Figure 1: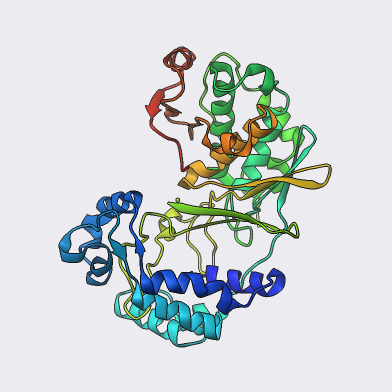
Figure 2: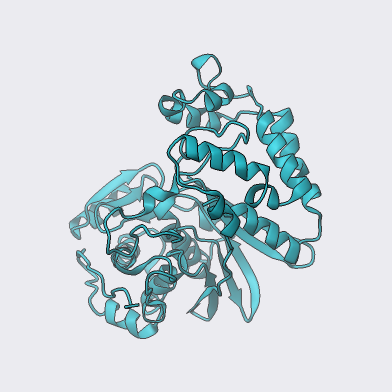
Length: 390
């Protein structure tokens, strides 16, 4: 469901200091005049070229003459510029009640899609209170369900709080082992009970409680890797972009958005110039599960814009990209800041690890001796260039 536009416009009206037209003007300019493709964008086009070649509209922009745009060649999105100009003039109504919505609905109808005019007109944003965690005197704020990230970051911080992470040191086998174990615990619980709280009884209070952390911690073996199952059940009843911005008045925004895979569904809607996301592939096609499909249901996400406060004052705001590896990466950034004394830049660039209970991915920057020690502790170590996004 295309809900981002409504959220941005409502946020601007409530908290912004500029008009929608002024805010959107730079994007309209970039779309209409074009910008130089970067080497990274070229690599992304190459990765998605096979699927994008099947759609003339998206190929015309990114694969002219059938070949991927090279670095420094211009990316011009004239049709998208017109869409943005319409929104800047008419606001979000242009999509949810107006002509842009008509184009989207007609395209979906002609191609077997399921977005209707009623879906657009009835869409409402939902404001929820953030998940709060206390970690060594710091207050951590994260996204609430349906996002899985805030709950499980809080859960993992609670478990780790009783270990002297600072004394263990950054990047050694003991620290990585304990990180891996809490990640496996979190992913087991995430699979069992994360989802849209309007449809799934997400046990937020239990997952984020110190008592539950104590219970899970008691089962951790500090010298050996284990397999973990869920400790909770439902209560009855990733290619991504992050931006953090602050202004002179002390207002801070941490926002993460995604169309899931690179170029989303890898086709473009003629008349809009937009690429739909393919985020529905995160749903579980089987009925009866936390992430099963249902009308009006909001999909869970690992997106993790987080803030860290000390004595009630905001000190850090951050986020990352990387699909379901985002919230484990955000957790490690917080540990780097609080336990290891890194700067904000160092904290988000330091080598990371990731596991969801299968292989333990460890960045190549972690020394061979540390990876060998982890292997001896029964971790299935896989060395990778990077974990999640920059």
